[in-house]
Length: 251
Image 1 (tube, helix red, strand yellow):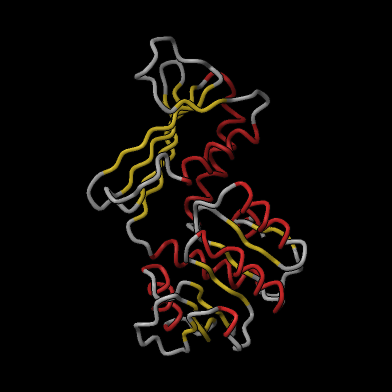
Image 2 (cartoon, rainbow, N blue to C red):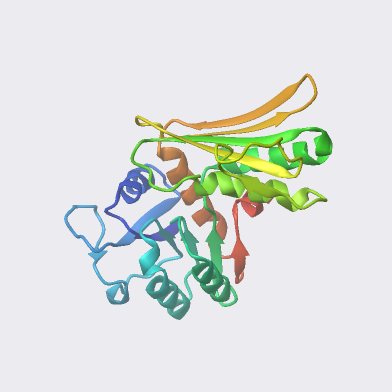
């Protein structure tokens, strides 16, 4: 059985993961970390990560970007692998987690859905096969409370496509401000915000008289929770290094 410390246990995702782990005989949350201790979770909760003295095999983090440094310091000191599910890290913070991965296993993905990461792999394959004969557009939809646009996942998809192309691409976010023909070396990114949409991402390949569309729809936050648990089980026992969903999918 994999023993987990849930970092951000009293947040929305922390509670979803807590519920799923209670039903999974292969994983157990043995401790939680959260600045607010106002729930009965069935495991001890620490408001200061450095006060946590519970032994664990892996840490799952669904918290806030501001606590990355103390989290990595604790994980490195205790030699505990960490699954980072929080989004919005700065470039310097990404470099920080990369440095930590030289000492401990670090799993980092901007989207923990297995389906989204499979979509990225399919989009990369399609981009290689279709070449420059097809224009690429990415459309993402989220609930009306989401602040950032485009989503980190949309950028993750675009970055994955750019990795496999033999030409330099640039991202186009706003065509309203300019009047010109579409550049062949651009990827359009479009954000829709409304209602309670959990998350929808479409990659559109538009060619001459034909289009190909790859779409993923998240119907519940549970898909991200399940992905983080799968990542934790994958990461436990791994050597130091930086891992992501492509490692899990291709294992």
